[in-house]
Image (cartoon, rainbow, N blue to C red; front, side):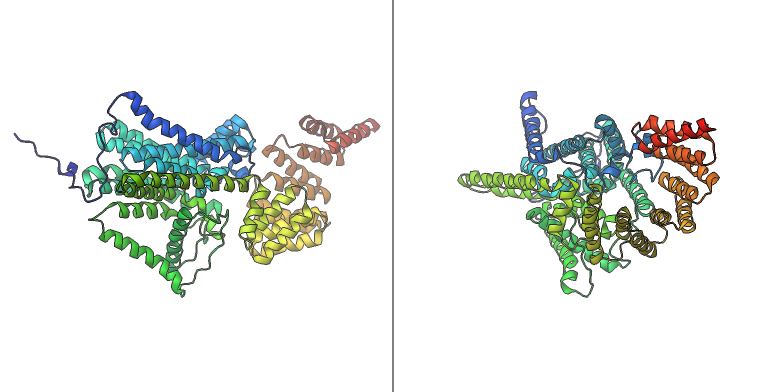
Amino acid sequence: MTRRPNKDRQRAKPATASPPRAAPAERGAGPAGPRWRRDWIPCLLLAAAALVAYQKVWHAGFVWDDDAHVIRPDMRPLHGLWRIWFEPGATQQYYPVLYSAFWLELRLWGYSAPGYHVANVALHAAASCLLYRALRRLCVPGALLAAAAFALHPVCVESVAWISEQKNTLSAVFYLAAGLAYLRFDEERRPRWYAFATTLFVLALLSKTVTATLPAALLVVLWWKRGRLAWRSDGWPLAPWLALGAAAGMMTSWVERAFVGAGGAASGPGAVERFLVAGRAIWFYLGKIFWPANLVFIYPRWTIDARSFWQVLCPAAVLAALAALFALRRHSRGPLAAALLFTGTLFPALGFIDAYPFRFSYVADHFQYLAAAMMLSASAAAFALGVSRLPPGFRVAAWSAALCAVAALASLTWRQCAMYADVGTLWQETIARNPGCWMAHDNLGVALMAGGQPDEAIAEYRKALAIDPGIAGTHNDLGLALAGKGRMDEAIAEYLKAQEIEPGNAETHNNLGTALRRAGRMDEAIAQLSLALEIRPGDLGTNFNLGNALLQAGRVDEAIVRYRKALEISPDFADGHNNLGNAFLRTGRWDEAIAEYRKALAIEPAHARAQANLRTALSKKAGH
């Protein structure tokens, strides 16, 4: 009996410029030695080139929100790992694989930034090698050129040199590994490869949900290879992946709104404005890939105007280009596939989905980390195909020019890395390239305050407010700086402005209450601190500050309750033990006061106030 072929597994007739079929050696045949040289020696060279190009960040410090991503001290115990996985909101975003990696790194090298930087560079190098292997498996010409361009392109520096963006490099490793495993499954149809690929895809999603685009990207790749897609062989295996990606995307969107503050962060409620942002962003990212000049940590935030002809032209040009490539698909599927991979991978960052960074810029280099790999791969393939059609004498010159271009990219990356030396350098460079960036001025002020330069910090905060006076956080930061200088009336005025802009902010209530206490306005101080505590009942600082205000107002028993609550939250809080001792001292409970002072000194032996207070308590006890 003749067996009917499975129509879903039939291959369509290759279209012009379809990917060339691999020679036996390329498909893995042949001796192990030559295969190792083909696959691993280039990978070692890629890794070495990336490590050298990023050498400047090996000794760089933490910048911006790195301290919030590199797990807080309260997350360091084993219980912190449980919170990472099962307590949304315990970390900046719900990416448990990423934060588990940070948790492990914290145990390996503590709060020493170089360890995290070297790990991030190593992950980027690994992603570059996996890209090379994937392109080789797909028989894409120019695979090594594409991987080298990705490894050394300066648009990737933001993802590699910024520790917080380890979510990009880590998720890229899982993304590309999952893609490779799925391609192996597609060839062999063995369940173990599908299970392995699915596991890697889930790890990618739990590192960063932008990787949810992988199943769609695989469908594009399979269409490019075959000229058609079949539901049974192509769509059905990837349907669970699409569902997983959608679920991860909804989870991330909820976390962004609930804990990060992404609500209303995009260009506006109107669909038209979002399309304008998306169209302009696509051309912006393409421009930075092919002409990587004037790269900025925070780009100027665009003013979107649907009445502007050229802004409407941007999305219209994207649609026209896609339509033209679709019309040319029978001649060559490659250009349309490349465009779909690039725009599809960028989709989560194009403005259709709200994200917190859109509050200050619609574009960022780290948004296109994976998408850049797609476009660089397509460009390298087009270059390699073009060179193969040149006369032999011109091929050497063309490949020499390509080598020079890669070297130029490496040089630009080397220079761009200097921007991430430390937090002060990062914000100063950002201001130099984007003077109208209020956030850079604000964060430079924070860095100056941390460095003991309050006057310079105050100047930066005022510059930020001159650009945008409606930023509650900057008014709050300015209030802190003024309070540090003892200028309480001015500090209180700034906190009140912050409250007008953002009424329910616990930090502002806490800071205002502390300033009012220092100004001697005790009833108002207690009221503000109590409001802060209603919003954040488990906050260490607010409980401690309210205890101080109550003690100063003579409400000693209530103060003792607050100090004890603070010490429940953090038993090793030396100031908490000292001030609880003061409350006991106030009521003549000498033994309890002495015990608290000794606990404070056991935690912090050089605590001068606890030493003086202990002498006083011992003296008073002896006098009684």
